[in-house]
Image (cartoon, rainbow, N blue to C red; front, side, top):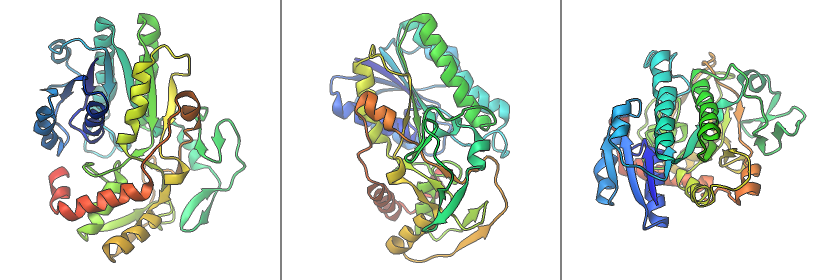
Length: 353
């Protein structure tokens, strides 16, 4: 079995690559990464030392992909993952679309040429912002909780299902990923190769290049450990916003099942997340940090932030029914793993920011 992993030197890509190699010892892994993301370069040689063929290249460039060997599957972990991309000044809207959508188009052309299957790591941010903004919530134990009547199939007590609206606005980032999803399905149908789309919640774990607008769990714990300035932003300025989290190593068993059973007649898109059991607010995360790492001050800013929503938890029940998948790493284990990494790597935030 030959697999190409894009963004292989990133957090998700590197963890998934190691996990696949551990479970499939005869696997041949080729990886490609542009190393644009700060910190990704530290994964390059350790992955090569495991026997992986890692190329430094850009998936937006057809010539870079043409130099890669043919494979049986592509696992696409490459993306600009920030919901603020295109509007925060660090990158333009055009650059965001070139990275996330343009890169997907080149990968789909690669799959067409080689007859490879395509596994896309997508995002919870493909879901429509207005109904999430207008969700009736109450504060329970320092966290927002939906108060509105649940309306299956779009919203269950376990979170958003795949039936929830993906109508715009969903942010420029969310649109780039939703367009990638649609193109992947069209290419797979037109050219006859299997496509699976896994919509992930917030990924978290040690080694993550955490920033406030993406790897929030890692960013918060590393910043707390270093006593760097932290701030609750938006809504009531009290940190009541809720997100779920998932360790990317828990995605590996699902990917293996999807690779080994490409003809299974199930839906092509699934939520893949830690779900309600892993969900917590920033205020609750602060309480955990305070007990584990000692006290610090968190400032408050009630001004809204673009594309922010009070509550985002994904229901992965459909994935459980179709693939027998569920997350294995408890949220407490994820937080402890990050805390130990923060204590061991004092300069981590300087390296990746």
